[in-house]
Each structure stands twice: as C-alpha cells, then as structure tokens.
Image (cartoon, rainbow, N blue to C red):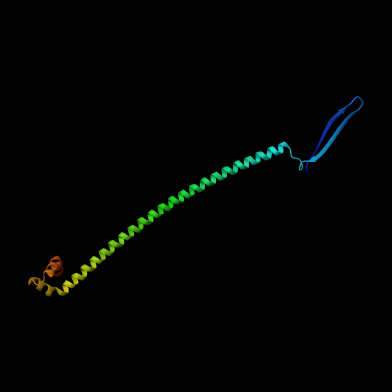
Length: 150
C-alpha cells in the first residue's frame, strides 16, 4: 500500500480588535500522487545519467563500427593483392610450361622427322642442293649424329 502524507497549513489572515480569523487547510496525498522536488531532481539525475550513458555507448559503438570497417577494408585489400599475385604466378607458370611443352614437342617431331628422312636429307646436304636444308641440318646434325651413334 502507498504511503500517505498529511500536510496541514495554518494561515492567520485577518486580525481586528475583536475578531481573529484563522484558516486551516489539511491536504492528504498518497506517495503515488505526489511529485516532490526530490522526485523531480532524482528523475532529472536519472535522465542525465541515462543520456550520458547512451551517448557514451553510441560513440563507442560508432568507433567500433569504424574500426571494423577499416580492418575489413584492409583485409579485403590484402586479399585482393594476394589473389592478384597468385593469379600472376599461375599465369606465368602456365605460360612457361606451355612454352616448354611446345618446344619439347617440336624438337621431338623434328628429330623424328629427321630420323625418318635421314638418308635423303643427308644426301641433299652433301650435294649442296638446298641452303635451307643445310642451315636446318647444321643445327640438328650433331644431335642426330649423337643419337644415331648411341
């Protein structure tokens, strides 16, 4: 049950030689109905504390969001750089492997062709019938000779 407060105010308002009029007012209130200076002060203090706390929480939350966004952006930049480097390395490795494979395949094909055509080409070289064949065979002649002798 709510506490009850009784306030009595006595006021002497008129005094004459023969009559004195006294007015007494009695007011009874419950705690739920009364608003006092203490209640208002406490409410203002609570509101100020809440406001300060809320402002602090909002500022800290905003700072955390900014830090998270900056860290995420930095991480994304690092990931992009790493991905670009990996892609470049993979492309370079693939190009080198393709070039090596093509060179090896061409060499094997040329060597096989030369082995199959050796008597004819060797005859043409010695008879000076084709400068192209001579230049071509000078490059591979020692290799073919080594392979044929082994």
